[in-house]
Image (cartoon, rainbow, N blue to C red):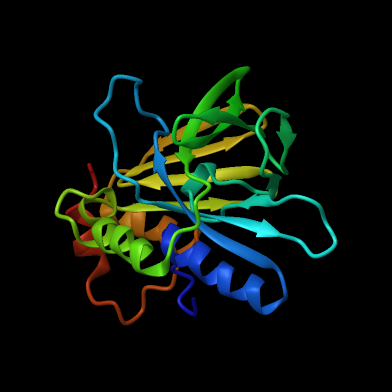
Length: 212
């Protein structure tokens, strides 16, 4: 966006889908269930993640494209097939068969970790709009109760949740606990390049979600 605010999966992948279609690619909009960083016995999450299955003219098969899964999002398209390990610009990923369709996993420090599982059934926009509405309005939804920002660079992944900044790169992680809302605001405008002019007292709002 003009304010460099970015967005969540329904906004980022939604916009990308329209661009790809306009360029002549085939696009199916899919829906999935996020399980990233959740223990196996955690309560089940809703189907509130949107990804794309993309057909490239002249290429066999389809590709999984996702620019909306925060700091661990795919940094390259991967083939939409279960089994092979597929290298991206950052970590290796793979798709494995799952009762809901396929599950996307990434390898971090020699361990395969699940991100989300998704159905291969194309989703109509009216159904995706329900997930988008829930994720952005439900009182306890993660995007409603807290501050989440992520950016992928050529060599690193930056994640900010409340006052906690994590910088992942070269097989290591640096974690920084920011002291104040002013420090968080400095990261938002400096590191992440977000323009906050005209949004009112952003620092005061950030102070309310420092520890979410």
